[in-house]
Length: 225
Image (cartoon, rainbow, N blue to C red; front, side, top):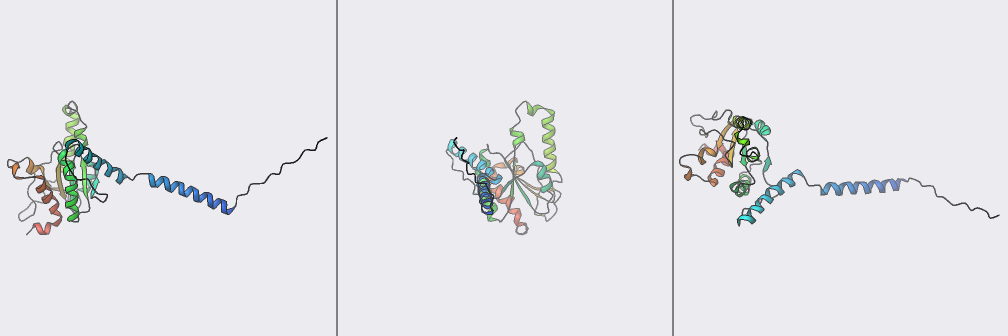
């Protein structure tokens, strides 16, 4: 009768070295995944620059794209309501990535702000207006929302205007008019480019002037001279 041979079985053992090796592999895999996940800032930068590049291609323009260390941060109306209360100047570019002037001046505003050592210019996009079709714009709900946004921006408008002040009276902000440069201080709207773009002598003004004047408030002591 043939004898049955027993198979030699090696019992698996967890060693410290093996555990460390596996942990190291897991860490490398996780790190690789995290490295390849784009950050919110990089996604937004791509969105801005893709819009600029696409417009350049379609219209044979040469608008400059933004560097990675740009000054822009996106803001919602809810967040803007809080930020405008700061005792420091709050700079806002109300714009659209489908608007030629907005795309042209993104880089120019960034360069000017950088030169003036302004750390942040908030981008507030005109999405609510742009995403509303003609029928929606006829509704009470739409007009109520526009009035709500306008009231937030225009709250305390001209409250800082006084004799000898560096501020001048500004017209009420209109949500349906963009692009627009806005400057706030102490919850008051102290600069609104719409005041000049819609004036009777609008041809005397241009966007280069709007940028210089709006961002110049960062050096308000010099403006007082």
